[in-house]
Length: 352
Image 1 (cartoon, rainbow, N blue to C red):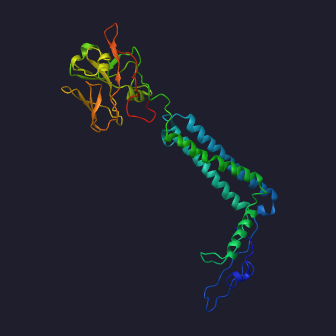
Image 2 (cartoon, rainbow, N blue to C red):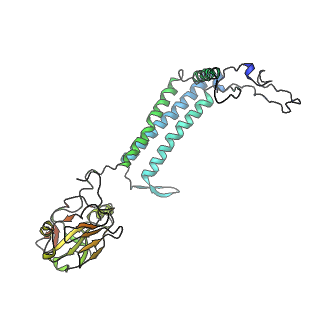
Image 3 (cartoon, helix red, strand yellow):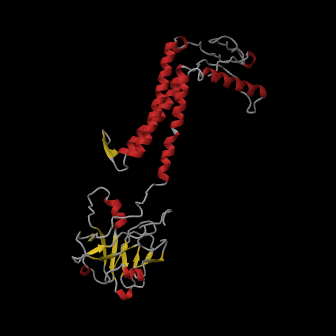
């Protein structure tokens, strides 16, 4: 606090004397004013070496904050989101969340601890008393406030303690970068991962129920079968991400009932393969009406006509289901002739 002298006429009666003075109670004022205790100098006030030690301590705390902020950013960029670590006594927890929480906590704590240590050991600790004033300050009071501010800035020794000043500015300048880095999650950077799936030319269509490759003879007219690409292992890392894009819905329709020319060309003997992922919000489609060839999403009732390019005929879905071009290999098994021509699942803003 400021040590600027307050004019005696501004003080309550009895406070214009030295620290520790006690006003005597009387009939008008039955409670004695204890006044302010006598000021006792700190070791930093009388020993410059102790003051230097405090300065280095504050600078160290601010430097730790900068390092923790850099660690926060490095953790966010380098640690996989699905990696886990064992931390006693919590058990297995997400490595990324643990690293972000620890580094952000250290960055905030060391800024606060440095500021508190600075105020407690190096700034002036003289106490002053002042009268309350009206909400609308007079010019004299405003001038006094500015004087107090200038005096406080002087007593903060910010100009003289350059090491503290520079490390504090560094910590305060770096810390907001943590929030800037977090903005990355507002817009994921999928690169081309949303445009491509595990399907490619020559991949066999594997029945998701039997885990066996499919032959045309396994499918009858009006049947609905779910398939996945050859080589996907449910126990492998990343399986859920891959199957969420590559899951197929296979139906067999009489070729003469197929209305869309491209659908017929991309089919094999009336066997058509469409993405199982609804183009509304990504729910798996599992309902099929063989008389109308309509597939229904159970989440929001989007309905697709599988005999007419899987176009949307009802519901909130924005576009048709992507079709996978299929054929038969030399061994008589159904295989993909490439990847989907367009991204599967819900629309996204970069879709083109």
